[in-house]
Amino acid sequence: MANRLPVNPTRMEMLRLRKRLQVAVRGHKLLKDKLDGLMKEFMLIAREYRKYRLEVDAELPRVMKLFVLAEVTSSRLVTEDALESTRQELTITRSMRRVMSVSVPHLDIAFGEVQGGYSMVHTSIELDQAISGLREFLPKLLKMAELEEAVRLLCGEIEKTRRRVNALEHSFIPRMRETVKYIKNKLDEMERSNTSRLMKIKDQRLAQEA
Picture 1 (tube, rainbow, N blue to C red):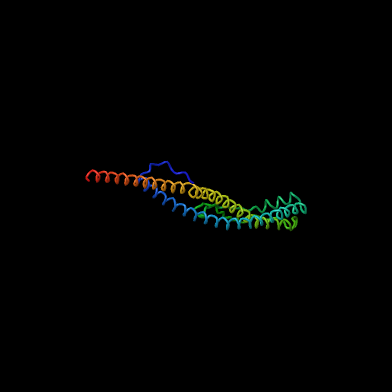
Picture 2: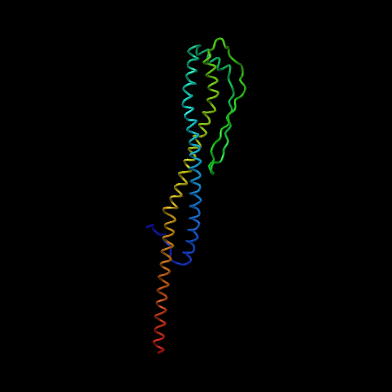
């Protein structure tokens, strides 16, 4: 049985607690709906994050292997010169979007124009494949990072909302109901006592008038 709140058993107190109880019940329903919505969004984003995570984990070793092969087939100096001569600006724009009242990041990536080039004679085809693979890999890596942060933020909001739902459902609302019940019983007891006392007074008067 839930412990009741320490209050005076008066009718005004009972009315006040009943209003608070109604607000708490409505708040509990809203939080439950929010929790359900958060869980639904979390599952969607977590599924998408898992997809990108698997792709990143699979593609990163392949891209790195191509750079290693490019160094082996040419040389580190030639490879570094080729990369330096084809340097490309990368712009990452960070904005925020709302998912069930939670602000999560959104990343936009844009590549600038390639400045210069390198000799196709002194470099290997692996270098071409490595540079092309890295260009395709980076957006996936950033998307994975975006989704990972969204998952982390949603997890925090889900945990916070769940604690509030549990506090209302298992502590606050039962204590409020127990307190209202206690006050009602006390008031009924007082009313019966007053009625009994009035009946006794009435009987005494009638006995005196007889």
